[in-house]
Amino acid sequence: MPQADGIATVSPGMEGDEKRDFDYQDFFENGAVALRLVGADGIILHANQAELDLLGYPAAEYIGRHIGEYYAEQATSDDILGRLARGEKIVRYPVRMRARDGSIKHLEITSSGHFRDGRLVNARCFTVDVTDLERTRLELKQRINTYHQILDGLPVAIYTTDRDGTITYYNSAAAELAGRQPLIGHDKWCVTFKLFTADGNELPHDECPMAIALKENRPVRNQEAIAQRPDGSFFPFLPHPTPLRDENGELIGAVNMLLDLTDRQRAEEVKQHLSAIVESSFDAIVSKDLNTIIKSWNHGAERLFGYTAEEAIGKSVTMLIPDDHQDEEPRILERIRRGERVETLETVRRRKDGSLVPVSLTISPVRNASGQIVGASKIARDITSARENEQRIRMLMREVNHRVKNQYSVILSMIRETNKRSETPDQFEAQVRERIMALSRSHDLLVSGDWKGATIKELLTAQAKPFPRGEFIDMDGPSVVLSPNAVQHLGIAFHELATNSAKYGVLSGDDGTISVSWKTTGSGEARLFHLSWVEKDGPQVQSIVQGGFGSVVLKRVAPTAVGGHANLDYGSHGISWTLEAPLAGVGTSASSET
Image 1 (cartoon, rainbow, N blue to C red):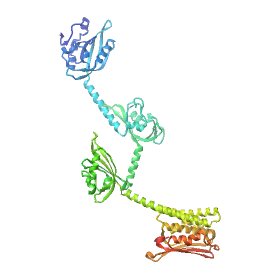
Image 2: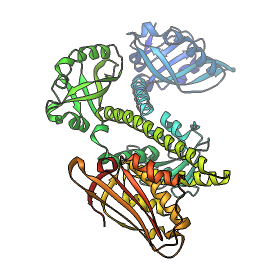
Image 3: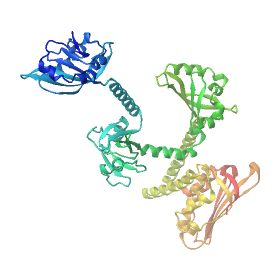
Image 4: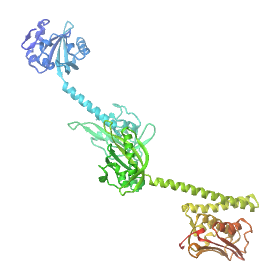
């Protein structure tokens, strides 16, 4: 197979005008661009040295063979020859060709055909090696894929646009936040459905912070906005649009990060309230490796266990476990190694000062990037208060049950005695209502005082308030806090006295006075409580009906309830009621009232 001056040739098939067409022999031979001449049947007719060097074949193994033998895909050569036969020009057609050493070269072919009588005779092919470029493209594509994977894994909404504002990418967090799937290559400026300013005015998309960042080629910060989802829900957010530039500083697009201010505001509120949270409700969070060595230690752990982070990190977590609970840690680590989560394990741990604290533990496996379990995260909550609260609740429920039954007993007795002494149903209803309301006023005092009791002055004021001139009752005596039992029964007694006075005595007119005084005598367990209700200078007395409910309360029910006795006396222009009882049955004594 002859060669002409370094150019591999095939003499058969070479016509005179073909030779004239290739009268640029020096360029063809010595040029740096790989060139070959291919016949209409696909046989390689000529190849310069650059072409041979590109694929690594000697002329004897390359020229005279069908070009399709060197393509990685046979269909590629068929497509190129078919296009050339139809008169098309091939420009930078990407192909993959096999080199002699077995490697694959990424090339771009530019070719045009030589025709005679309308039929393809041969074609000149200029070949450019783009293997390095293709490798760079592949690496770039892999980097972009990695970049997108990172962004897709972030919990923050992120999207990008080109320089015209058309969306080119968004991550799943952006779609979730916006409540919609933006149309890449179509939607512009924003991934959100509708926009509003922070004060509620509608904000056109082409005036949003992202649009401003692109139009003015600058980052936009601290411009809060409100977005509406297609389902009608709203959320406040803070955008962070930032222009993207190429190596020459030219604007090529922008990236935007959307911070949902709903969560941020919630976090701010949590942060503001941290200082007010008591130690028993601020959890300790500790991480450890599979050898029990502490790796992290938060402030909650410092408060709960007494060790600073410097003292705890690097030590074994077993220092917190009492001797009689040391068998817990191996069992916990065994479950963690199996990938299990340990939830709500109530146990005991030891503080730095040696004291024991009951805690509730939640323990989860910690994995590295490959998914391998490398440690555990432990949340410890002090349940001392919880256990104390449970005990208080049980005690409170027993107390409430006792008090409710006592209230029922008082009300039933009130209804029964009122019924015996009422002449008409209307009278019965009115008296029962008034007496239950009096009991309710006493009950309100107890509730406001956490059922610890109430003073005599508070009780008298509450029971006299509904009556005309009730505020003019004179009160004098030391501060005695009545027990809940005394509040209820003395409250009924004061109500009956005020009711009688409003009907027949001082409170029924403008004359006379009512003085209520009390004192204590004696000492120690023998101390006595004395109280007197005295009406003077009022209308002619009409006594409480003997045997009536008021008389029964004042003479028997109230005194008996506090373990004492009472007298009810009638003067010409006023009545008096005196009560004497052990102070222990009434309440406790304090400083003098003013």
